[in-house]
Image (cartoon, rainbow, N blue to C red; front, side, top):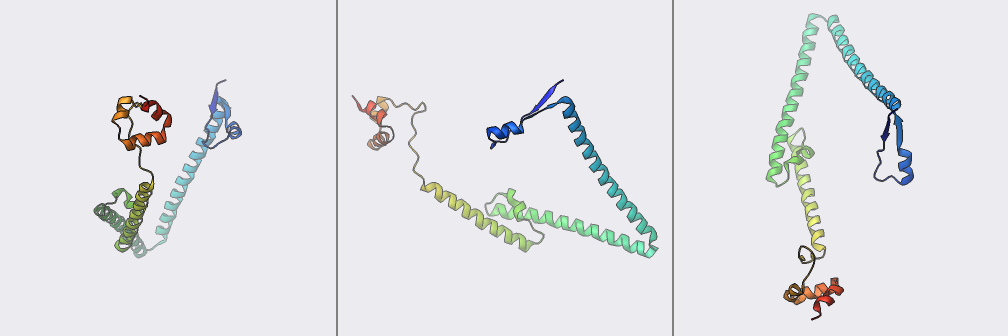
Length: 192
């Protein structure tokens, strides 16, 4: 019988947790679990389809009980709702395009447009202003944090080896830095 090993280990799991998570399934157990999962998905899809069908039947029964004038009014209301939904979707699409343009003008990535998108222009502009303010504050804080760190070390040759010739060509400040960071190397290079 073929065995299937499902060793999916979470990165934070300890040795004991890894042993508890690792389980070996036989082919029959795997097939049974797979079949159960597939059956569950099929059942959910069938229930969803049944709910839709029931809704359509109720709608048809409701229409059958109405007079001609009520049917006309009901269909008119349904069309108005559909038109209102389409108008709302169109307005959102237009707002999204406008927001992307405004973000680009302000130097902010247009990929962030979904964070500021709103149904009306005033709310959208408020969201854009808030995003711009917070974005710039975050960038400023990160730049200041990076400027406070020590200056980067002067690049050594690619292989990291300093020859006596290279040592002799170094400025005194560079030699002092080498003495501070690697006194053994400095001493070996400083000997004549």
